[in-house]
Amino acid sequence: MKTLGVYTKDFSLYHDIIKGLRKRNAAYVSLASPENLPRRIGVILTSQKEYHRISLSKKVAADAYDSIDYAIDLAMQKLTGKELYSKISIGIDPGDRPGIAVVCDDILLQKLQVDSPEKVVGVVKRFLQCYPSKETYIRIGHGSVINRNRIINSLIPLETPIEIVDETKTTPVQQKRRCIRDSEAAAAIALLSGGRVQSTLPIETSRGAIKNIQRWSRQLSEGRFTISEETAHRVLKGELSLLEALEQEKKPA
Image (cartoon, rainbow, N blue to C red; front, side, top):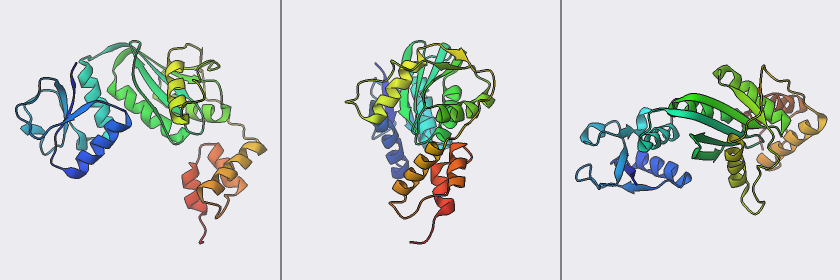
């Protein structure tokens, strides 16, 4: 089976690539030279400066894109050798730190967790660009209603079918770490069908939800301050991320 190769003399870029690959538990080989490549190397991640030194036809200049993650996605897509999938399902486990997974022709290609509901749309856009398909669906679990609706509303402009599915039996065993559980739940959600979203959904914020956001703000600021109810309401509505809210209301120690 072919694997990814990494070749660059740019230490900072090399570090970023390796960090991104390890985060995904992706197999790779560090290359000392772009010549006499091992046969198992299918795609090489490199820099724009060194790109033309590599004779292998499948290669990706990692610093030519907006993020290392996007470059790694492209490299892994090239590694599959598939130019067009029949069907892609992007599964989302909603929550404060949503899990996301992409399943292409019934094969799980990637699963991850992001820091906030606002980060979901960027990852979904990346998947849509990297994995071309005849049919594409976005599927999101029915729970965590406020976060779910915030995510859905951010995805509607992508003009890709969105389905809300019953996620009742998708959460794996509790012994696993939260980030692993959420990404695995997203992979299970991707394989389910559900009701089609027809329009933007309402965001109803309760008193309890506002208090919860304020509690998280205290935790993140290590007890130094609590954001206001008005700002917490804006966070729930998706107008601000919690980190942006903290920066906005930060007070001197």
